Image (cartoon, rainbow, N blue to C red; front, side, top):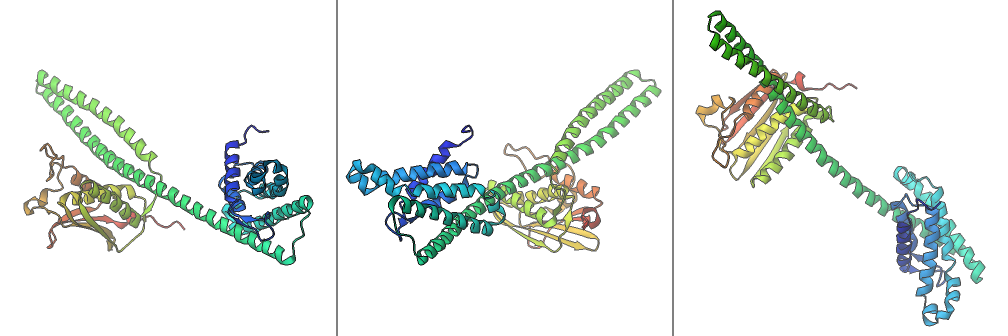
Length: 427
């Protein structure tokens, strides 16, 4: 019976209610009061819906009566008057007991679905609880019955009190939902970052697989030619190379398979709007620029917007172009990202006011190995980023080009067929 009762929480509710009850007004006599205790009790029941409401009301009623008795001037001046003080305050016990019973019979999911309707029910519970307390006072203390105007005041106060608490509860729930949404948004951004990175890596692995397949075939054909030329020693070396490349291919296949499984497990969202893709590109690279201690202003211009199921490829490519722009800016600058449509093509333009690209290097920027970036130890970066962008663009039958704006810096224009990106509305 008592196994799953949260007694510590119940006593917390009871103690908080008793203390808050000392902030009150008493329009119908010194001991029948409208205080924050009942409001605190109602709010805490909403915040701890797993509590057994009847037991909570019972314990709270006892604790309130004991607290009021021990803090009353009658008991403090003469401790032998304990039971007299107890009788004066005992009627409050019935308010909390009846309120707990009333809350027990109300659907616990109603506050999250129909708050206003729930408030009307609680007003009824509050009025019934007050009636129980007033009748108890009449029985134990022989007090005078309330007048009609006093009953009206009781109902009005109940309504104000209930909707005040519900407003406070609604505000707390909204704050909680905002915090949960912010956390989910953060995890979503992290998931997209991981997924787009995995997409890029798996793309490279598939390209490497094709290269390995080609080299394996060439080395085996070399072995056959050397055999035909009756050169057994070089032929054996060529065969050895071919066999080892084949083993490397199998290892690469296992790595590719693992990457694809990770990539697929992170594809939680099947489509995103282009505006959402650009939003996540900007958010990620703002963090990157901050990490590099750079003050960069990002501006966007979306002249078109539609849903796409190729968001991971776009994130991979646009993140690459934008992070390059961040790195090209020395300390402060601007990056402008534009999305537009031209005929049956969608254009993604990334423009920065950084150091730009030398004219003699424009023809080589998309070749693997080209780089203007060096690590802190002086070693050159791998220079595969822009070649990756070029290969991804080619896989979509698109193109990538770079120009030097008159204002300085660099401008990359990624052109992709709209039909390869656009997710048609199924509705």
